[in-house]
Length: 132
Image (cartoon, rainbow, N blue to C red; front, side, top):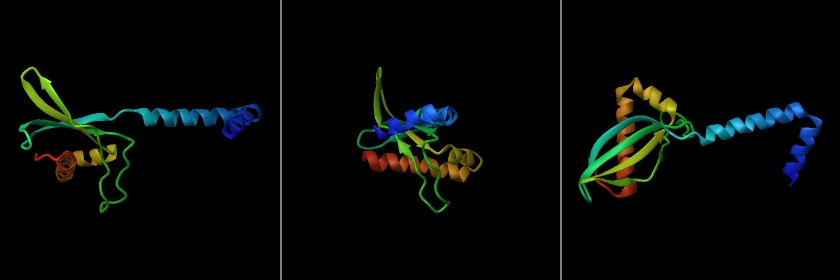
C-alpha cells in the first residue's frame, strides 16, 4: 500500500519522473519475459537407460548471466527433458540456455564451443541420470 501511495504522489507531483520510472520498469519487464532464442541443435544418443536419439537445443538467453571470470563456472539454464513419440520414432529433446555473449565468443573459438557442448551433455547426464 505504501508503494502505491508513493507512486500516486510521484504521478501528481512529478509526472516526468513518474513516466520515466514506469517506462524503465516496463522495459525491464519486457526483457525478463523474452524467451530463449535458438542458437544451434545437436543430435546425439542416449545409451542408457533406453537407447534413443537426443536432441540438445543450445539457446541464448539474456537472463543467464555471464561467468564472473574465465575461472568461474559457466551459468546455464535447462528445460525439462521431453520424450517424444512421433509415429514410430521415439526421441528426447532438451533445451540448454547460455548467456548470449558466451555463445557469441564460442562461435569464434571451436574449443570454447566444444566445452559448452560438453557441459550441456554432462548436465543432461547428471541431472536426468542418463548415459549419453
